[in-house]
Amino acid sequence: MRIAHFSNGGAARFGLVTDDFLGIEVLAGDPLHHGVERTGEVLARESVRLLPPVASPSKIIGIGRNYVAHVEELGNQVPVEPMIFLKPTTSLIGHGESIVLPPWSEHVDHEAELAVVVGKRAKDVPVEAVDSVIFGYTAANDVSARDIQKRDVQWARAKGFDTACPLGPWIVTPGELAEAGLDIEDLRVRGGVNGVTKQNESTALMINSVRELISFVSSAFTLLPGDVILTGTPAGVSQLSDGDVVDVEIEGIGKLSNPVVGPVF
Image 1 (spheres, rainbow, N blue to C red):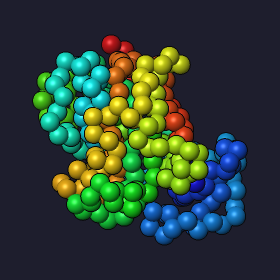
Image 2: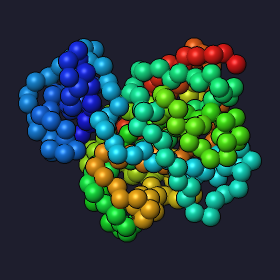
Image 3: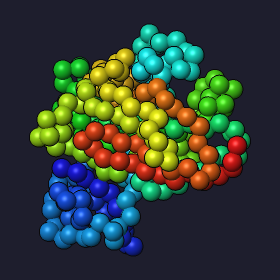
């Protein structure tokens, strides 16, 4: 299933994206909390505006430096264990919404990432049980003010400013990926700007695998339904400017696109 969160002029709702991607079948309630209850009402895709695919996560958890080539391109050292940081929920935007460059930064980068959506309350989950707590997967852009990240040392401002977490376009369930013959530990992650590919790598080259990350994060935090875990970005990050359009495409999941507005550096 591909589960979208959307608005069509009224209250935000959830729906199933049709196989042809031309429509969305409305669901009754939030499937994270109430299960998938179909209504039979189908809306034309062009009549809705996609929202971040999770309505109200208690937290957005990022993982830093999880691909060796990305660590090297920024001149850092490979971490001994996963590097965890948090992005506020106010940084969330959906597919098509604008990334607004902050006036206090002179260098903002895109970071294409696979994101995991947690499906149930979980703490201290062993790696072999991780699949039982996953609701689905989506695409994320861990937008980062690189100069501020270096200046502040801690990453809250650099990665947490408003619009710094595009997420979408929808959630793809594990069953959907399995039916397509895709393995979450070997998915292609692509990031591009203005139609030019900048990042192109497989999750197979993560330092810590998707399942290892979820297990590790659950040892630090109690995970709640709707929480989002960003799993790290491949090499190829580049600076964004006013007027750019940045894409994140995850194999088997879809393409997240966002225009960029703000100061030109």
